[in-house]
Length: 395
Image (tube, rainbow, N blue to C red):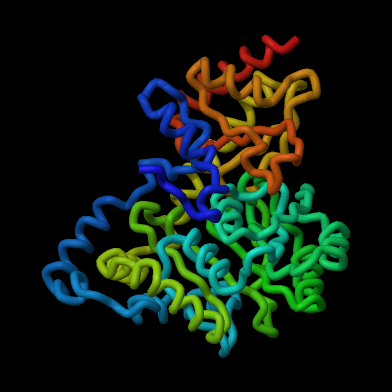
């Protein structure tokens, strides 16, 4: 049969990261391309115990259909926690449980984007979100990311000149892939510009708990008194990505529309996973667990950065991140980035070419992304040594 696919799906390309992972999944390749949590940080024993208890005590609730908005005790717990710890949320806001933060991006797009509308995003930005916006035939406008976040002057220029801007997408904490954190001044400026131009802000914060040094910066949502921010959160990086539990906090009117959109996608997120997470947050010391995760990742990050300095010093530049999972490296002009990434793969080291994270194929970059949470310490040391040797081939 000659399949005729929709225009929306025909224009999409597979995720470069997922394609790299498929090619390098044989076990030999050193995984610098992924963004997976380290296996040792999974609370597997606790999840096993909680699962058993729930299935003994509340089997019908766990195995039956649930409401689309999510398991009520978990929604209430998340709302209270966000308010108490971060001053996030107003009386007009409501929580909806989603299949990870990625579904928040999809639902926000479904609710607000018409074909041809513009989404302003960071350049570079998370490929999963960029592909989501593309799936709704949105126009992507990339604004360069500086060491302290999005370039605000160029953002204002885009808001003044680009047509049908509906949304500003930002990852303000330890941005994927750049690792940069947006300053408080820029967060306030971004909010003021969005308010002035009547544009929704989609604040994606999957890495906010993964700070290894420096001081926390208030989220954009924390000063949202006007109801223009959709806040996307996730438990993938602190509990388990496989459980697929994320959430959105947004004005009730927006949440109601997102609920309808979710009903058309998956009806509701898995009840058992929601109930496990709710009990985890109630019964276990989450702060201690996050402290443990930070200690593991902080050590891995410092190890990778130190090896980059010793093995590729003078050939790359990068910002040592204060948290998150990624390091964004820029090669010197004598090294072609795509050739470098291909040669690294030929030597069993998987990195992601920077072009995968750009809003437009015409946007140029000589950068590549490294992840330090997935590989072991031994793989980090060996992998960076290999990258150093690869770089020497480009003299």
